[in-house]
Image (cartoon, rainbow, N blue to C red; front, side, top):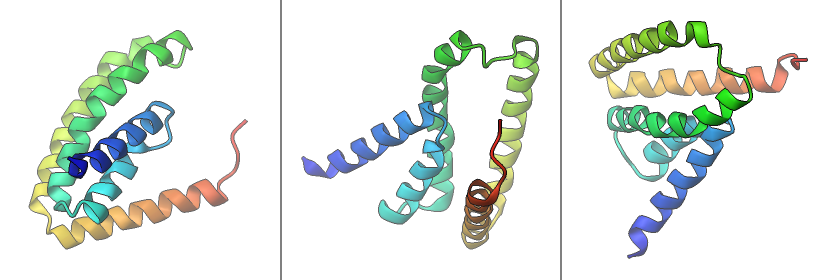
Length: 121
């Protein structure tokens, strides 16, 4: 019974963090590859599917607070879907070790930008 509890909690916590814009999807990907032992390709596919309900749950709050620029919404959705499909196709062609190294480099760069970047007004 307890084998499903930790994954459920990890999904719930990363879902809440995603809603706040903290990067819960990235944290979920780290959890799935490091702690759950999933293959990088499978974890990234799950992460893409995970984003859809998390994004939909955050959308009403973003609309209410005026964070959505409506004239660019449909072009952004179209470009996002096309590029996500292209990136998923490209990721399946890469070796898992190369994919892991690329993801690790991304995390290091993103972390450095957060630590040493200029604060926004």
